[in-house]
Image (tube, rainbow, N blue to C red; front, top):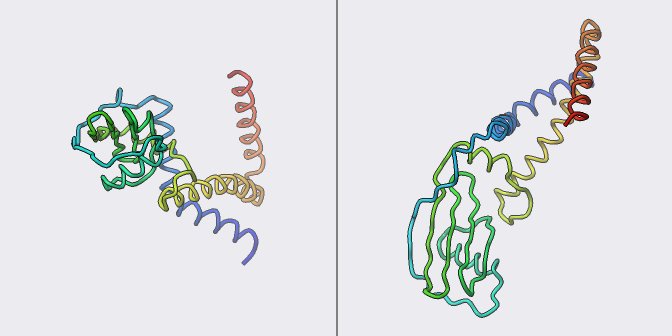
Length: 192
């Protein structure tokens, strides 16, 4: 196989495999650019329940959150606010239906609320999904694939240049197009 054929095949198969991520990135960027959020977040009550498992004084919020999420069968990536000694909020991250779990130590009560689905907010979460911090397999696989997309985009740019240079008939207009794109980019960067 020639080098040119290898470049073309790699360019094509990478694009075919990564097209869902590229489409997701494109649509989510469009939603963010046009502020399609669907308004302020609205939570729907899922359940309220007593929670009698005690937390020893000084329990780190991360440990308390893991315990509560495990007991609710909601293990996954999360953030916390407050302290398990008082009012404690766990924001359970989820692309489709994030949840807010509020624990109140005084009455040992849990309130579980689900964020109402809105397409714009979903696309925003998809776009801003963070990488390697959560210790869950799906989070890590997604992070690895996002890194592959980044490398692929650089490769597509370079392989596109290679394929363009191989087609002599397109060199003049390709050069004009490339210079025009670079000029517009520099102009906008200077103006912003």
